[in-house]
Structure formats: structure tokens, C-alpha cells
Length: 135
Image 1 (cartoon, rainbow, N blue to C red):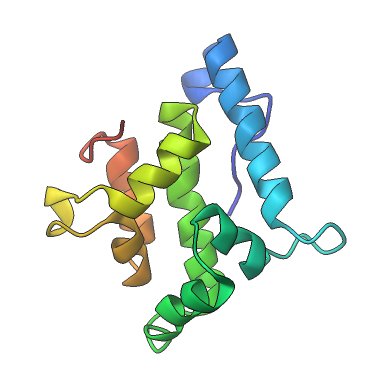
Image 2: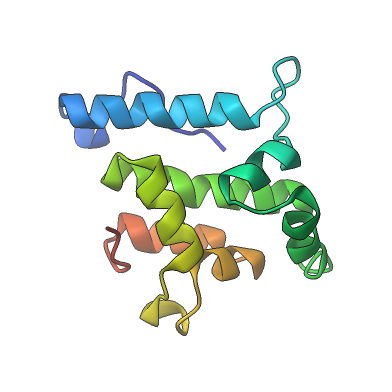
């Protein structure tokens, strides 16, 4: 999966300051959750962003592992966070939405629950199509 970089903006529109700050914030988030040598996503770091212990975070995924490999789960989490944070330009608001917002389009599940079921790509596309409200 390729995530946003500092130079791009939707529809090749010039980036305003808020969107630029949002892109920088997402890049810093990726750097914070990634192993500095390999780029691998660290469960300890990702779970801390969700205010969960590494054990609790991993257990929630592990309960569904028969459906969703770890790498795909992480890729879908990041894809959803990327498209939502592109709209909010605020990682804190994005994380709160991901963990707590109940989505009528997805049976009143939270985005986190949707991703745990392996439907993260559908959710990301729904956000892009504006079929799912973001803050």
C-alpha cells in the first residue's frame, strides 16, 4: 500500500497549510509506529496510539486471525487512517473516530471493528466516496 507523501494533494490541487500539516502529521505517525531499520509496523507502537496494551491490541486481532493475516490487517488499518486523516488533518480526531464512531453504513460497527472483519478496503473506499461521514 502506498500512503500519502508530503508533495501530493487530492486532484493535484495545491496543498493548503492545514493539509500540509496533516500530511506531515501522518508521516510522523508512520515513523513513530515503524521500526527504524526495517520499516515494519511495531504492534507496541501502533497499540499505544490506540491507548491499548500490546497484548489487548494483538488479542483483538488474534481472535479474528483465521480471517485476516496480520500484514493485511495492519495495511487496512493504515489505509483507513490515511484517508480519514487526509480529511481531518488531525491524527487525534482520526484515532478517536476509528475507535469510537458507529457507522450506520456498516451495521453500526466502529471502523476498528470493520477492519477487524477484513473490510478495511471497503471502508477506505466508502470514506473516499463520501459514503461514510468523517469528522
